Length: 211
Image (cartoon, rainbow, N blue to C red; front, side, top):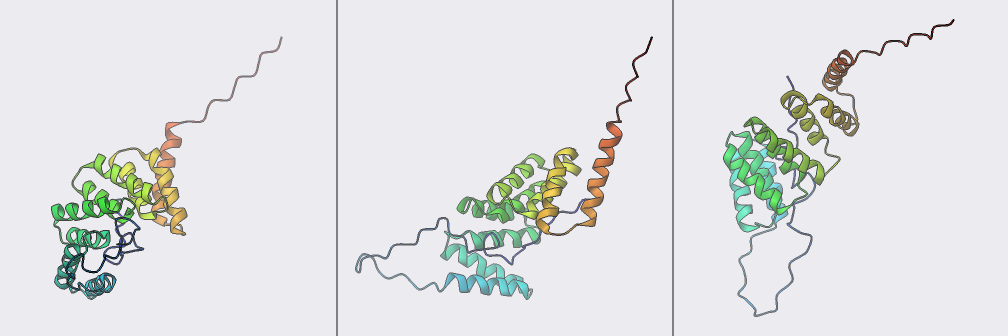
């Protein structure tokens, strides 16, 4: 059985790298007197790190509550939405997971982690074409995502019955992972063996007759 790769779980910021603003611009300071002072919502990065720490310590309810609060207080960041979606996915709340991850991907179209998880959830629901498109979006966002290559290869090989197309993604996964995964090597060998059986070697040409 082909096993999906689902690493990065809740231990990333947005796409395993940053909190994930919708864009790279910073809010402009207002002119004094323009508006009443807003309540201090704290440092979003510190709050985010605290939520991930709670998750790692298996304080799931506390982590979920803080991630939800972050999506309210700082809705422009994709990281809390991403990890909230992953938390929902891991607790079998598929619809909520898809909604949160879709929001994360909209906020940050380069969030390959969110797209990879959307691919996983769609594959589990039997929505194979949606899964394929989600994995492709993950790779468009980050061509070096080993997990997206791995999951797309499995989808093509085991579910869409396109083993030839899967080979390139298995190869990319092996290269990007920096190791030779024995399971993947076996799957590649199976595909290549079927290719060889389907394409027998051509017969040797008959020598020309001589007078």
